[in-house]
Length: 360
Ligand code: PMP
Image 1: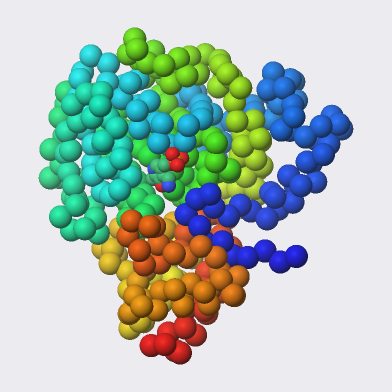
Image 2: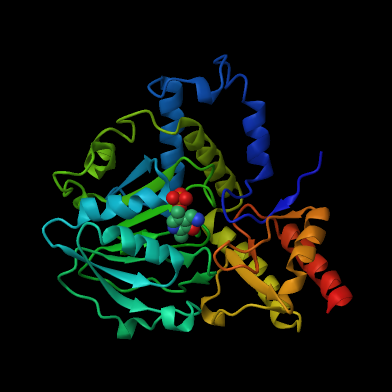
């Protein structure tokens, strides 16, 4: 059996060694006679799996005891409403930066709960750049400042953490969590849907500064109340146990690779290779301001859109899968998360070279 290179934006490719370990442990997890999927979430065994995953994540991301780590459900999308419900408090307004489709979704959802001030937007440029922070119209009265460090669809990524000394900074790191070092202490809250860099879908990781707990609006559903989830070690109800277990295996794998520092160096090398190739070609193009090109999601177009389906068919035949761009933007997109080996990027470049030679 040979594994393809899967460039899907999410659910995304997982490290092969993690899948092998999960396979080996499937029928009988360490002599328990059952798979992790079948275990009570209250059992000593699962609690150990859950605690180890949290400990490894804290170590990898450098999360101090000032923060709670929550393993929630509902994907990153449910955080779009969970965040305002918990953090707006009596302030009534929050600041949002609009850099693409995921920012817009977060803005639309938050607008249902309070006043949203869009303090900066790169929509005029077609979301090809990040507005200079000096021009952001932030307010000291805002309950928090929300931004999307990596726009998965646009392939636009911040290369800096916004300064927000007085207002908690909230970041949707769904598509770049653990891809390079980040100073968690700069943030009030970080959240990430798991299905890109962490594990399978069904899980969303939330890292929240503890002083932001306990501020949820009265009408906040219990399952969305960060304080309740924190008080119950993310087991107020039955958590997504299997996803949590697999996330734990991914964290172990990441530690074996040298952690996020080493991973960041590999990711930069992979991304540079692909962008350099695109920039040096007359046949492929990427529209993003080079400073803000995503290390994780690389959108590109062909010289002639009419060749798109032939490009994808040929790629599939070579085991290079899921290269079609998001349905809302078209073109191509190669998602090259942590688990995409450098050899996958090399294979993609080889295929793109041959295709351009034949069709260019
Ligand atoms: N935010 C970002 C940046 C994303 O890429 C995605 C999913 N692609 C989401 C939010 C939504 O995640 P979910 O499907 O887990 O709700």
